[in-house]
Amino acid sequence: MSDNKVKVKKVLFFDSGVGGLSVFNAVKKFNPEICPYYVFDHECFPYGTKTDEFIIERVLKIIKKCLEETPMDVIVVACNTASTVVLPALRDYVNIPVVGVVPAIKPAARLSKNKVLGLLATPATINREYTKNLIRDFAKDCTVISVGDPDLATLAEEKLITGKTDSAKIREILTVFTSKKEANPDILILGCTHYPFIQDEISSILPNVKIIDSGEAIARRVRTILRDIAYRYERIEEPKVLYTGILDDYENRFMIFKKFGFNKIEKIVV
Image (cartoon, rainbow, N blue to C red; front, side):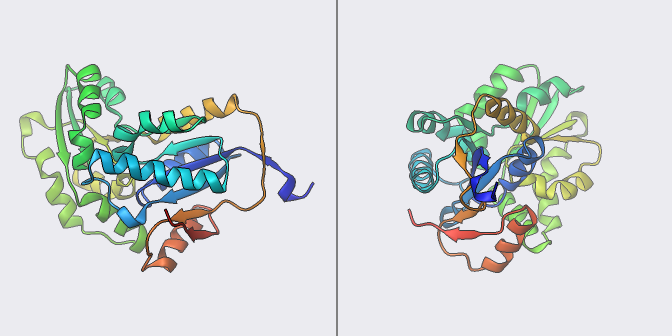
């Protein structure tokens, strides 16, 4: 049987930037058979300072465009900021399963020994009612120290693209987690999919803090969903990356995605 006749299960990963590759990487490890597609809204990156209304309208428009070109089995919103606001609207809009990424507050509260948690996220994620409800429902016995920084996602994206980042700036952002010796967190929640790419820098600054994110939980969820979905689509092309806007550093971005197994990157207009 030729490759173009192979039946596959297609998963679309969405993020405002390349940070969602951390989620893709986790999902792929647990679901190696998937045919993945990745779309990132470079034109409007980052989402952390955008309004709810803007994000909902933007995400629906981009997802619609993608599904018009290629039908999918599952959509993974690999962006914490978008997930905290767009999931209900997106699930009403499409007729396939949608998996979102939200801060891992529940497992963090369960793991914490001193009941002090750190939450590192974008300002939008920190301020959303969704996040506040997670803390209320699952961490009411904990002190949660939240840091919503507008620049950290950009620093993480620069690290992924160039291999370099501003460690001094990261240390400055994390100062709040080390400023009170009597109430430092023992668990730090990475509330943005970009942040795992600077986890080494974070760990060097907070060596005694356990760092967790949502990648593995999302991967397991996708695996459970795919088990109940039949093979419906033939592989008619290789998985590809789609982006909005203008990529001034196209070659660098292309090399990043090649490292994750993508060999095609194309612009879409929405």
